[in-house]
Length: 459
Ligand SMILES: Nc1ncnc2c1ncn2[C@@H]1O[C@H](COP(=O)(O)OP(=O)(O)O)[C@@H](O)[C@H]1O
Ligand SMILES: [Mg+2]
Image 1 (cartoon, rainbow, N blue to C red):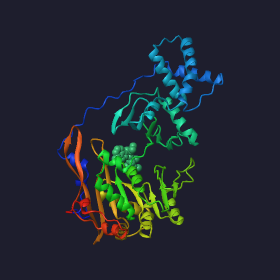
Image 2: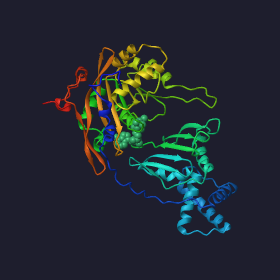
Image 3: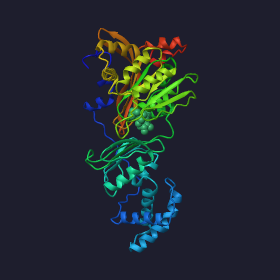
Image 4: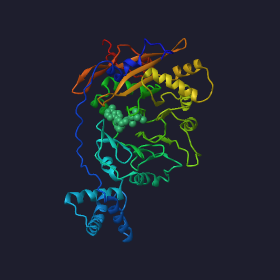
């Protein structure tokens, strides 16, 4: 912080969450009741499931993964048979639940299958067998489902990773994977995870959000939308920054949508999340090391390779390390209009993190040279934040003006002002600071002219 001038931007002031911590109290609404059937697996559950599975095998009845309806029809009579033989008396309702559970275990992802099917749920978190949480409509809550034990969780883990030719065991206890629908999965198991096997799933959103959605949600203003579109079309180098799950990738995706159709775009990601609609897009995805720890292709390798592919634009899903240097160099050498995201707490922090990442490239560059590089490469920082009420908003837009001495000068163009809280919601607005930004000249060079009202200036 001390490295930078404070008067231009203070992250503490642009992060609404920080503001909230200073005395203002925010009462959150009562958690919504989770309408889902709670059903703890009965003690005989595993035995019954195994018996059903055994009989399916013996009778060569093929059930296909994912084919729930068909599978249930095939499983039902066998389940009834097993229950009868075991002398288990269950109500019709419990039988129905049992069938759901057995079917989900055999055909899907077990107890978390209904959570994956619920379109309101965006994330599913399994912290060992007995504690499953979800994010539903932006709120974290406990889900009324449980696994029987660690082994039960591991069977589902197996089901997730086996089709990808991966395995999770003591020798590789942490794995990133993807479900067939594109959802991202992280798995970490004991002894590293003390709660038992943990699964974290970030669901893939079939319908990608648009700028209009963001306006409707109150995440951005129409003025911001016009400005952002102009910024992309005018080939500004833009960094979208924010915390985990704040909506960086979503915004990057929307911004990328403004890239004109006649440009060649190369996207580079850890796990392909971007869904560009343009035709001329080359998509590259990094590769984690294999079980022997070999064969990794880093984001950095892909950025370097992309530069040889005659790109008009490079879109990097997220910079985390040394690739920041290559990205900056690309931005500085004719690949302007590049876009990326980065994890940070505010626009100032974004600059500080970039600096650290460039150092990670191991080039031993003097700090001043790094800052020079950053300040001439980056034009715009758009910072997003997930507020305490669960809403995701653009909370700051800052332009990089250049260097003054050893300091990078930042100037806010839009900042989010909190006006208060109503019914547990943050009330506020992303307002222009009333400054005519420098970048309007770059826009003018591309024949894009924004009215003064966008910036809160007199018309
Ligand atoms: N403005 C928004 N309003 C509501 N939900 C959003 C918004 N932006 C993103 N999301 C949702 O939030 C989740 C995290 O978004 P993502 O863009 O992946 O965050 P990040 O890249 O910062 O980790 C996703 O489920 C996404 O659909
Ligand atoms: Mg992301």
